[in-house]
Amino acid sequence: MGQSPFTYQYFIDRWADALKILGAGNSGGILATGAAYQFSTHKAEILFDLKIAASLYLVGIILFAVAFTVLTILPSQIEAFVLKSDQIYNGFSELLKAFNKEKENARLSIALVLCSIFSLLCFLLATSRAVFIIFNF
Image 1 (spheres, rainbow, N blue to C red):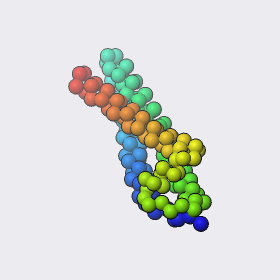
Image 2: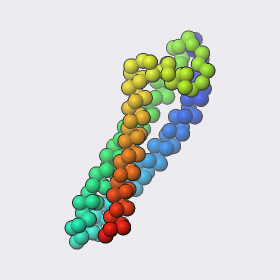
Image 3: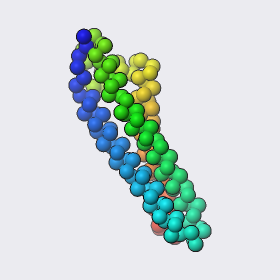
C-alpha cells in the first residue's frame, strides 16, 4: 500500500488559480477586441491588428481549455499512481519525477505545461498588439 498524496494538491490548486486568471484575461481580451472591432469598422488601418489580437486571444482560450482539462484529470492520475506505488516520497519534486517516468503521465504533464505557457504567450502577444493599436491610432 502506497503513501497518501500530500503536497501535490497545493501545487495543483495554485496552477488552477493561475489558469483561471489566464482564461479570464484571454476571454476579456476577445470580448474587448470584438467591441473594438464593432466600433472601428470605419478605420480600416486597425482592423487587421484587431483580427490578429482576437485570433491570439481565441487560441489562448483554446489552450487554456486544454490545460484546464488536463489539470482536472491530473489529480486522479497522481492519486492512482501514489496508491499503487510501494515507495515513500519525500516531497512533491520526488513524487513528480517518479510520476513522469510513466509515458502517459509524462504526456499529461508536458501537455499541461506547454498549453499553459502558450496560452500565456498568446495573451501577452495579443495584449501587446492591443497596446500597439491604442498608442498608434
